Image (cartoon, rainbow, N blue to C red; front, side, top):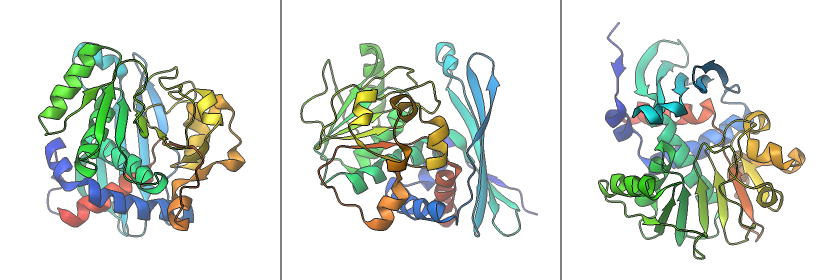
Length: 302
């Protein structure tokens, strides 16, 4: 058997073009809802210092994957990345490992691409201005996706400090993405807000608006909520994975949403959802199905 190819972060990123990921995720969202992708809710074990190690397997007829990642927020103070991990990609019929991708890069790019799929499905037209709340890895991936897919839109970023804002803008500038700091209230022109933080308390509490799509991607535990309950309750809610959201989406759990009215993005893609004027909140918590979709893209182009 030939040695298994291992792709580092830069090589993994080159395999996962955002535009291609969007189409793969649209297909995977429908496959997941229909049971053609098997992806149980992730399991986790605690690590010292409020960290967690997460296991996310997924399989379909053509491919099977396993992502094992650790998330350690305290690493920031050590000057280290907060996420480590790898994704093993196997043949769907034989189970034979074929290659390994960088876990944080897969997570970052597929999560950002899933948010952009939400923009494509739920936004009535081309966004004028985005606000990304947060300055960590997820915020960076989202800003890079916006820069590639919506280069004409204004990109605002907002972190906890001016120092973190400046560091994010400097990083994005290296990729040719221009970002503007948002001070105080959300700029009126913003029609897409993306919360990408690990905050336990809401970082976005503006009233729900018909002309502003809100996407929450950072909080993935029941005790964490980036979006204020009042905003959640006044919105039509869509999620990436219904079973996982019912266990992990603190934004929705703390708002006491009626789960009978919560729909998946897969159903919206399948039905060709049209914007009907109601405020929309798209909440994602992650699924091995989305990693599988990214691995399909990588397999086809490597």
